[in-house]
Length: 378
Image 1 (cartoon, rainbow, N blue to C red):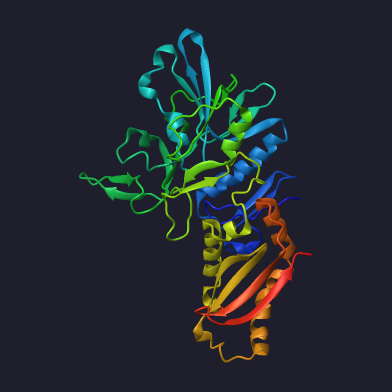
Image 2: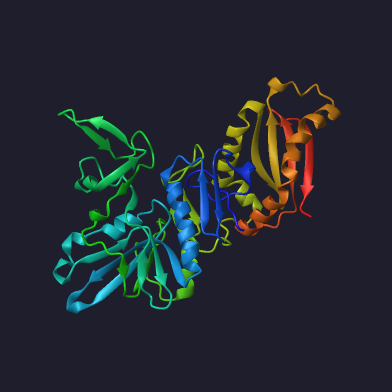
């Protein structure tokens, strides 16, 4: 039986509950094709959980699972051209997939849309099949009053206002809330199909690196795969990020269509300094807020370090070493029974074979070490 525990929206899967919120849990039994999604407030997590199962099932039955959009162009002379667009959440897959190109191809039969987010490709016939009857798209690209919005079935993270006639109007832009989303009817695309028989002619990776020309054509499949494994992108409002994150900073992230063994970090230190580590610390601090402790992650070579800071209000400065050990050992002990899972997760997700995990407790200003304990990876 295989299982994964997921963090809050937009975050990578993490190891055990103590690196993420205890209020949310995703349990996947891929052998039985079942999943339990508990405590999620974001509908996108339910969609991702469902797609995780569907993609895994497709992969075991001779299909390539794709997180992207696909469309078929009708060209002059009865020719067809199938394009697949791949990118991380919020990068523009839906916008490009549904683009009508000012009717440029209407005279030849128009454009057929398979889907803008999830499909599979039969590795024998090369035919593509859509996995969703509707669409789950960001609303910010479709301003209030946009005719496309008449196809919305439900909306989330959007505000509402009254127009001059007293009618309620949906505010689709990310003004009050971020990551506005909506489920759109299949009828949004008058040329929507559920299957495209023709093989894919071109794959497009969406990059946001200004040093790369607007359009680059690659002929070698090996180089194209590497580009997909190292997408140059920027943080979008589709992600839950730590406070103070520079949304315009360029970052390299593996495509969600690449194996999970491809690590976005070249060292444990790089992970400890990443937004992902900051988010993990933020989620943990929310849980332990009432204890008077805060935590952040650091790296000492190949040893992961939990740095705890004790509030002065706890009055620990006057405690003896024995009393401090009595106070902090239970915090460390809660990790011991499940520490092997944490070691395994860091190895499988990031390729890091940790030497151990160290727990260090400091005074509030960090000037005094109160207690430390280390669990080796044996």
